[in-house]
Length: 313
Image 1: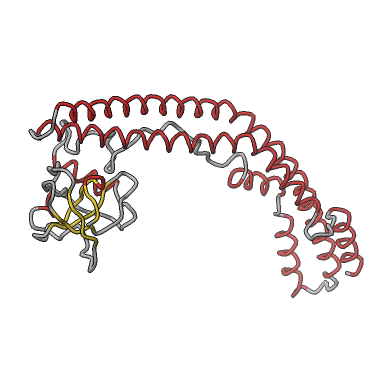
Image 2: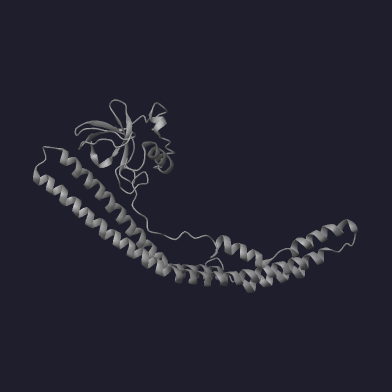
């Protein structure tokens, strides 16, 4: 057994070279190789995330500007100059949406063009690591068989089955199969989820259309909301049956922040609040990424409202 241990020790010295600062040279070379292969694609991915964020923000601003313009038309106190400013704001927001969308699509196209080279570079480094691992697995199998032969000193039938099973288990080890499995689960063969163009969505999955757009019933909309919107506050199972006397979909909170409405707002759905400019209500949660807040009217009604329609008192 001493010869086997010495053989393994010498192989380790030849295959793994320690560094002064710790770790092995081979591991550092592999890390550096993957990092170098990823760098160009990773840079483009960051640009894509920035462009996507700008596009989605522009869509949000456009929606709010259009809503304010629509509300101002119903307000007889607004002067033509005020109405003109709101119309100009809508036009500017539309231009911003167009510009940011073009930028988003351009960066996404550039990223897709970089993807084949990224895959090729990553696979080259991965195959180098696989070759090194194949040598290690084959050597380990060889050493284990040597140890088994040295331990199998007894020819007694009581030990024969034990050593036979040990040998069979070791011989069943297949380096190629292990490498194929690792490739399919953690390497180039694993399922990929490449970035795709994402349309800016409203809180419940529709593309910035009024909640309650033609083509879907109120029951269907309720089912869509409960399936797709969570807003990090747990599953919201609000639907039409619950709205007709079932459990309240919003969990009561002991504390809130008092706010005052800046504009009139008429709820488009059963789970939205309606109020007039100057009304006070209680804000029960922070604004979500889609621009909505949860609140409670003084009469106890709970629901959602646009965050930009109120100000803190």
